[in-house]
Amino acid sequence: MFNFGEDYMKQFYDNWQQAFGGQLEKMVNDQEFISQMAKAIAATMTGKSMASKTMNEAMSMMNLPTKDDIVLIQQKLTDIEERLIDHSEFVEDSVEECRAELKKLQDRIQVLEKSCVEKKPASAPRVKTVGKKPVKASPVKPAKKSEQVSKKSKA
Amino acid sequence: MKPFGEVIDFSLEKIFRMVAGEYADYPRGVTPNEEVYQAGRIRLLKFPARNPSSHLPLVIVPSLINRWYILDLTPDTSFISYFSENRDCYLIDWGYAGCESAHLELSHYYHQSIRRAVRQVRRATGLGQVDMLGYCIGGTMAYMFSCLEPDMIRKLVLLTSPLDFAEAGVLGMYAKDFPADDFIDAMDYMPGWLLASSFNFIQPMGIVQKAEKFYQKYDSENFRELYIAMERWIADPVNFPARSYHDLLTRLYKNNELFGGKLVTAEGRPVDPSCRKAECMMVNAEHDHIAPAATTRFPDADRAPRKIMNYSTGHIGITVGKYGIKVREDIRNFLEV
Image 1 (cartoon, each protein chain N blue to C red):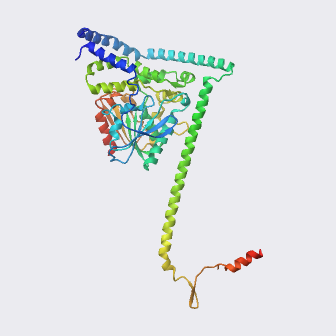
Image 2 (cartoon, rainbow over the protein chains, first blue to last red):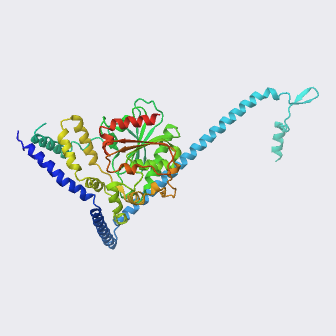
Image 3 (spheres, chains in turn blue, cyan):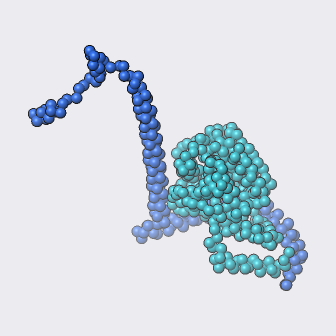
């Protein structure tokens, strides 16, 4: 098999890594270098915004939508979607709360009904007695059917 | 060790296969999952428990800077596979941001999006609290969320997550000088390829050392599998929305507002570390150049119980390196007490 002379290559690599790698690491960690990089990035960003602005003006002159217009519409759509999600979550939570409240009420009604049923025999002696016959304490007597019919026909 | 010629031969074959598209459909993550919720480009993925023994679900918040499947690269190194052994895991997939999310503030992600995900998990499980694990900037976001919604989280694990940006290392030096205002005027997002290049730039010998490591270990089948999966992950960068990137640089890196307790959300809610309740575990990598140990200090106002673990490894090595197994075990022990 063809051999490149691995020992020589390895020695070369180790030397190169020690000499070049160390210097490179030092350079990218140097504050002055970082400041210059930042300035270069700022200049690139300014150039890009100027180019975008020129392009936008050219497109506007031709009555064509610019990239910024499209992006703005996309962002509006995102906002609408976000609001829809918030609202649907609110509705879901409200429905769940209502269900929970309803469940609580139903449980309470059941408990009350149970206690009423249990209390009935105890409340039996609380009836008014006229002479020998026990009369229930209901204040309003239901009208007879024939009376209701005659009232309706008069009206 | 094989002769150098064979190494070149092997590498070229791999490159040709890659160019031919053989690895194009390489799976993003190896653990089976299902999408349970979607809001915009953000998805909530569920990794069902294989042998459920813990009823509390784990919500994983990955970094916004890269793709989530660094935590699920291969079956042997997968964090997600490990934790979904006995409990349901949910993961927030931030997706690929485009121009449409350029105006969204960072708080949209660390408050609204995480709250929506936790809400879905609470509805699905019927539980009031969840456990949360955040990786890198995802951990910082999980921490901020735990300050805003302290009652929703029982235990919090922060994996190499910076909280104090005063001494943020070389990344902090670049961030402090970065022309953030010029950037937001010119760009809709920080392109993913540029972010990936900048990480390579601050570690100039990283690529050379990686090639050296490949040469030394390419005989091992496990190493090759992990290497290819890792390269696939590196070649899949994500854009960072402009407004959020501006917030990250100015509010966190330049002004250190989180540590000082001065950070507020877009709605004006203060992110107050003194409100936090969840017991927290901070996992540090001693050779981390992205989140050095000095950045992982807790704010003074934070009085919640905490545990700090240090491992002699790097930022990525803590998930896929030899310490990965130990880290996972320690996290599980912390979560299950």
